[in-house]
Length: 309
Image (cartoon, rainbow, N blue to C red; front, side, top):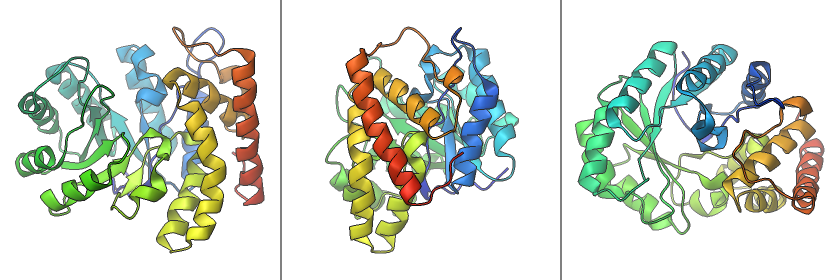
């Protein structure tokens, strides 16, 4: 099991579906190998960009196991155990730990409003069910995400709580607040495709969790920014950012655009680039513009000499 130290890009592995909506596990393994060959920090699944909410319990376990097998000793695998029930999420997390995951992740339940004390109790239950380091995702479009006090209290009670993934705009002050409140014990990762990467590196993020198809390019941005080569970082980022922003207009649109880019980059076959229903089905003009932005990403990867899958 590789060491689960998250520093840099941790992409979400998509679930490749065939036309009859079956999982193509060889294509999934290809996605993991692409991340390993790109020397990324780790991979994560099954998360929102893995369409986890369309997978059965058995399928979620199968994709985690397949990713761990494909990663071998080359790459850490973050296994995401999502369920509104803390008890069931804890059972899933424990199972993923037994499969050989490097780190456990879960999303705070945001299907209805909960007090912060309720969220703390939920998180405690899952953290205490495993020995592995834990990453908590808080995606809350309807309100504020957790902050420094939540992170401090949970870190005091559960030392294996190590990372927090947040997805919102203008969160530089919140990141600094979390780092200060926990005395640097909790690393913060940016979600939402890495859209605010260059703004949040100075705030102290330890990494980002984008889609897989642009992850190697964003790794270049990450490394250049940390080497104080800001001009070169911006040059790459300004080509990737329009694609990220366009795809993330809608979470289901992201799945379509992401998988089409993975096909263009040779990571997965066309036959395994389907999105499981129910989904938002883009019209031809929407897909065509997505392909146009994808082609710019492909051209940039070739220019930088990044290898195809």
